[in-house]
Image (spheres, rainbow, N blue to C red):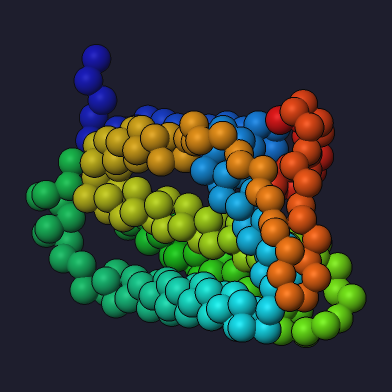
Length: 248
């Protein structure tokens, strides 16, 4: 039996959200247990090696590293500004949306209660993205402070942690924007929202999967007496590029 116009939201919208949340829970499991199969784990593995190399380089090389971190800070700040600006526009959109448009164009529940839930959910996603990008910039700024302390005994792991956490919050901010995109289509009906959920999971699965083996970097000595990094024997336990120890 076909669902009526008011009930279709109660079926398609929860199904779309379950698909999105289910995929991201599966992605989180892969990041924690099998990070080498994800792009996030692959990138964080390379970031650890990059930080180690930059901290053992010359002051000129450290300047290059600070420029890279500065670019990351600028990108996070720009996306944070965009997120808060889009969230501010939602209130204007709510006030200017035509009731006739909502009733005639959207196939689904157009009651004021459902409309309010749509806008609140969209607002939450944009505010979550704003928060994540702000924290990303915060960790990158902290990494730049640590990295600019030349000839000090600051542990490499401190800078690695700040850079990786900054990248993780960046990824979380992007995920919040992906959710916001899906909820934005809910404004035009539950069918576009459900279709977008399926399409986005397919695309994200392709983008999040990694088949490139993790390279064990080796560093040659330079004028500052950097010691060559010895590759680890095959099968040895490495540290998870994101959170905890795991076996690759």
